Length: 181
Image (tube, rainbow, N blue to C red; front, side, top):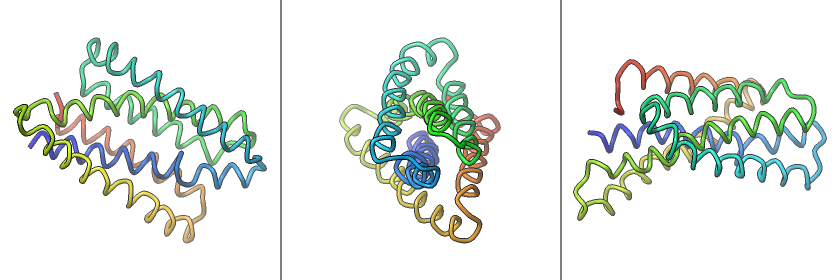
């Protein structure tokens, strides 16, 4: 049960990642006039911040606040950064939004990955990681697919705002259901 719960939470996280940094944020950056170098820098900023945040999330936050609270915080921070995107007008503002996203993603990812195998016997951890990756891949696929349909229907801003709502919903599910301890 823990493996499937954590995998479902990770799918929501991957949905957000593939909507933002790997999906529609570069399109949005292009719309506000970003050059190719600025778009590459956007990814660099986000991934660098995520790397530092992953260390802090796994080493400091999870021990200080607990896994569940750290994941909830990660979703809320990611939702904030995502909700900011359609309101940015400059690349500096967009860099800031993506840096905030990087913090949130970094807090969640290492903890979710560790939790996926934590309750599984050592000999089954490879299989558990395969299940975890297969389930979170649903978010990798559905994010761009749903985002594309939504973007065509309601516009690019709606893609980011609906994704921020998904982050808030995931945080609420974590609070209400106590899926992770």
